[in-house]
Every structure is written in C-alpha cells, then in structure tokens.
Image (cartoon, rainbow, N blue to C red; front, side, top):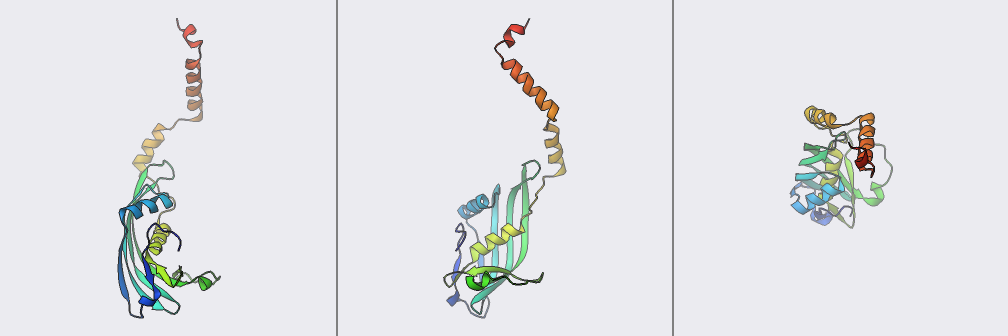
Length: 177
C-alpha cells in the first residue's frame, strides 16, 4: 500500500454490510512524516471517524476528517495556520477496477485501492487531508504588509550589492580620508 507514514490496515474479511466505526488519531511521528510528505510546516492534529461497510469486492466509508495544520504562505513563506473539517465519502475498490477510466459525476465518491484483500484507513485519511488543503495559502494582510515593507526594489538591491562590493575591496581603506 502507498504512503506508509500512518497505516491503519483493515482486512476486508473482517468487514460486514453493517457499519463498523473506526476512530482514527494520527500519532505524533506519523503527523511529522505526513507534514514532510505534504510540504507542511506542521500537522498538530489529524483525526477522523470512519464508518466502514463491505461493498462487493471492496468497501465504502463515510465519516469526518478534522485536522490542524500549518502551511507556508505562497507569497511570503510565513506560517499560515489552517483548520480542516471535512465530511468524507470514500470507496475502496480492487486495483484492477480502481485504475479503470470511468465517467464520474460531481457527487462521485473518492476511490481508494484495495491491496492484498485489505484497505488502509490511515492512508485514506492522509490523502483526504492533502486534497482538503488550500493549494494557495496566504498569510494575513497585516503579515503580508510587514513582509512587503522589508522587500527591496531591484534598484535598491543593486545599490546595496555595489556598496558591499566597494566596502569589501582592498582599496576601500585607501579611499577613506
């Protein structure tokens, strides 16, 4: 199974047509590894509850994902805290059918693979988090204004570089009165 940072594997034979609830809470080491995988500053919280039922050769899961993460602002690189609270509807299917191209309507469920007669609920939650994240997080206007104040124009940067070069020259001491 892909991922591997946070594995919560459930064998299909243990599932029934009646819903079974799986409360999931990612441990600190898994959150740190997922933060690195998704290029986040941090994942302070990643948890969810999935109600899973057997469905044909696979399974269906519904539930909720809740996470607190820190992303980087796309403009300034400053930390941007974000809270994710998403309802989930997932479908787990064997790889042979999961890879087929199928016309999906906007209400279609997300499809995750069944591998080796098992499903990985941890990886499913991790991927749901990745999809739920803001692809262009931005710091608050106040933080951006402060960062912009520190930026130099191209002319200012060139002037500073020229001054630094002149000061570093071995002849700079001779020019001083």
